[in-house]
Image 1 (cartoon, helix red, strand yellow):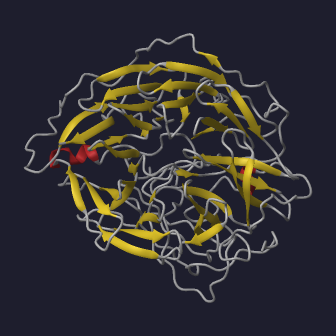
Image 2 (tube, rainbow, N blue to C red):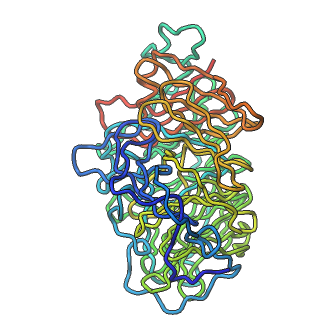
Image 3 (cartoon, helix red, strand yellow):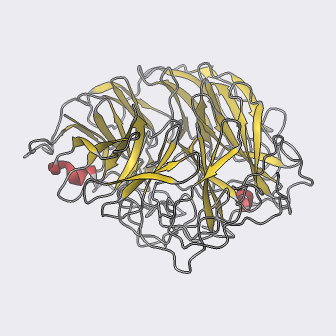
Length: 606
């Protein structure tokens, strides 16, 4: 039964607490946590969000509150249905989007979201994470689990929603794909690219049973304000990394140059977190260097060869729907480029424009997208500025954009993250109620379950102030039956909790094997792969945990050398992946600090 859209969210996992818990995920910088909320969650004061060595905030400006992966809470009575309608969970079940009367009111930032965190620990803020304002204000490093589960995607921050665009999906010129006429690999200041180097002798005094540093690379020069280093793709025997204006490719075995580096005309501003089945990605870069530059230039790349494919320019949408920033999502053979109120789909192989997703119904605007091998999820903001303001989740046919199903979210609730697309696991918040919720859905979009675990969790998600980004949560894994979340711990041992997607209840837990936090990386061949953070005198670990059967003990797959612990723990917004028996760590952002000798990428193995 569909619940009236103006019914307030209710019920859930626990009552709000006057003083939220402090501390965050996998590293220092305890934060006042944000509230999370969603499909049937009661208001809860969320915990601080962690993150494998979360970055320390600068002294100024004041650091914003940070979210966590699930917050401790006290039992509340009675437990009531959440934001999806009268049924357990916050969704109603209309299969067609309801028609919402009336136009948007005055332009509102981010579907009504303020530009500062609306409550302590606004979703998306990582402990010690970025502060609104100039980029590069974070000064310490953090490690984030990367490449975790199939299509781990998230939304962070806010977007503008007002009016729609024209027939071309943006009110501007149609994007035109063309082949790059410069297939050469440009060389500029770049990391050392010869193989097998260990100039700092990190493998010195390596103990029996310890793995070795296979190779590591210094970061390229970056502006003093810092620069993004998004994406890390491991394909075959090549590891590819974007940083500032360049894309680097290293041989996985010894770190030698595989191809490139490729240099783009301006700084990289977005990438596809996933690669296609044939190892293609798309990188977006700015169309200029000024304050009014837009993130609207697309370049397709072949990860195996470094060959540049098609290029395109993303057109602006209507009013308040520019391509100042975009998000890139891959679903099968489709690339979706999301603006703040619309999206344009391209054929990933050829660059041909496929379709636009624009305003629908009375006042519903696409806000964000998330994709997997065969699924494409769209979140829309509806009725902004009216009494019927709400959000909707839709599944689209990636090839045509046709809506497969629509799930209405109860008023006051916002879709903030998708922990997984297939199966669909969504994290929601209600800033008025300071509440959060994690809900799961079946393949037809029907509400399935909500997490009912009384625990403080600590996956790590990015935070964007002026945009919503569905893709980016790390340190969380999902398979067909379970959601795996790390409990919150700043520096000491924690647990990973396996939560059933069928009923939202915890089925088993596993302790970190060391006195340091661990977090999920991925589920591989019936085993959960987890990364254990290094300490001052011990290198990090990679462990596996059986996901079936009665025993869920950790088995160590890799023990990193103590001599490299400081470097291992010093990657700025680091990304971690495990593949082919090797551990890869790379920076998610360059600080621009010339004195820090920061690293770009590092590999461990036996």
